[in-house]
Image 1 (cartoon, rainbow, N blue to C red):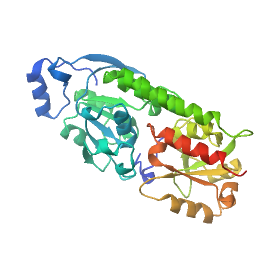
Image 2 (cartoon, rainbow, N blue to C red):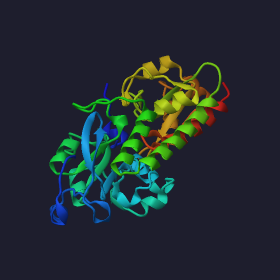
Image 3 (cartoon, rainbow, N blue to C red):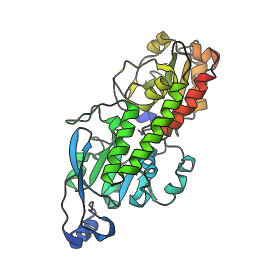
Image 4 (tube, one colour):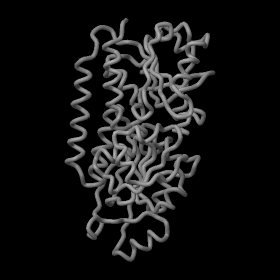
Length: 341
């Protein structure tokens, strides 16, 4: 099974070491279109070593960060790093940034593209850091990988949630712990460790509050429907919806799949007898169309969840790695507590 999201699904769409000596070198890098070490208040660039997936990498404090998708930008904004963000790349699958809790921060930086992440965008932006996921942003096929950016002296940061099959340097953490890890690591890179500690602490507090109120009894079987008609794409245990389901009191019916977004069969969905279907809502196909398909298709119309109309719509940015995962958890937790079984 594939671990990446399919092109039709629209995730579409889904450095390391350098030494710069003096302002002349900084200017030369900027003019060349490559990344530059720019330190705060004119001081020489400081370095710190932080893991990029399973690889220890030396970073200097970034000043022209490019974020790919809402999850990346939200992580940076939640840490108060707007002044370090040059711009963002937001493919059509993402809901409008006006819906973000950090809408005012998005307005302060540049929208660089509404297409997929590519090397040209990053070089043109004179980026000194790119934040994205492996196979959902960084891509061998599209010619933009951390290794390629290393050679251009442009730093890169990978979402830990996407690291479990990162070539040579895999790292595997539960999705929410991966989110916390990212915030701590970004905090270290940007030297805002105390802010990161507070942000993670608040997310953990909210998570525990939902878990403590989870419905008693057997967990509710839940199927996440991303996309697909011939075969559905769903969430394995390596993406945030898995933790949202489990911590709210449900059971991801594909929790045994050690995958991210992956393809399964309708027969396996039928066999799992889900009592709730989560619809992942994003740009190219509204949730209402997906629900209509599930209601009409002979493959799904007899599912317990479909017959009872038990659909929960999860916003795209609540489903990909980012601080809004906890918003999704709180909403789904409330939904399960009120569900009539």
